[in-house]
Length: 261
Image: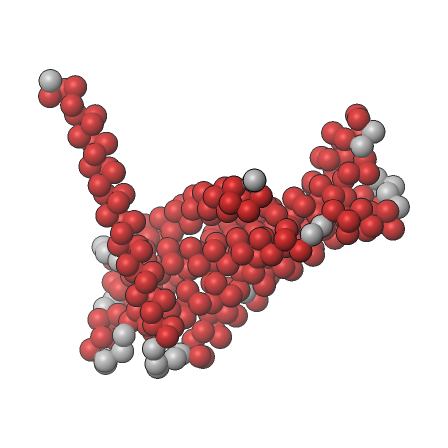
C-alpha cells in the first residue's frame, strides 16, 4: 500500500510547493507594484532600467525580428507556391510578426539577456548583505530595487516589440522583393489590407505582460537567492527557464482570449 501511494505523495508535495511559490510570487508582485504609488519615486533608477532593458536590448531584438520575417517569407513561399497562393505571403508575414513572433521572440531574447542579469544583480546584493544594508538605512529594498525594474519591463517591451514588428515585416519585404521577385507595391498593399489595429495592439499588450513577467521573475529569484555565488547562478538560470515557460503559456492564454471567438 505504501508503494502504491508514494507517487501521489510526491505529486501532492510538488503541487503544494508550486502553489506556495505562486502565492509568494503574487504577493511579491503586489508589493513591487504598490511601491509605484507611494513616494519616494526613484525616477533616475527607472530611466536607467529603461535604458538597460529597452535600448541596450534593441540590437539583439532587431536582428531576431529581421531574420524571422525573412524566414517566414521563404517558408511561406515554398508552401504556398504549390497551391498558387503566393499573394498571401505578405499577409502571413505581417500577421505572424505582429500577433505572435514579434512579442514572443522579443520576450525570449530579453528574458535571456535581462532576466538573468536582474537575477544576478539582485542576487549578488542579497548574498553580500547589501539588501540588508538598505533596510538599515531606512530604504525599502522592494521599492528601491524591484519597483523600478517592474515598471521598466512593463514599458520597455512594447517599445521593443513595435520596432520588432516594423523590422520583421521589413525582413519579409526584402526577401519577397529581392529574392522571390514580388512587386513592392503588391506586397505593401497586401500587407496593409491584412493588418488591423487590433493585431498590433494585442501584440503590444502581450509585450507588456511578458516584460512584467521577466522583470518580476528576475527580481523574485534574485531577492530570494541563497548560497553565495552558486545560489546567484541558480537564480539566474531559474529566471530564464521560468520566464521562457511563462511567456509561452501566457502567449497561448492571451491568444485564446483575443483571437478566438
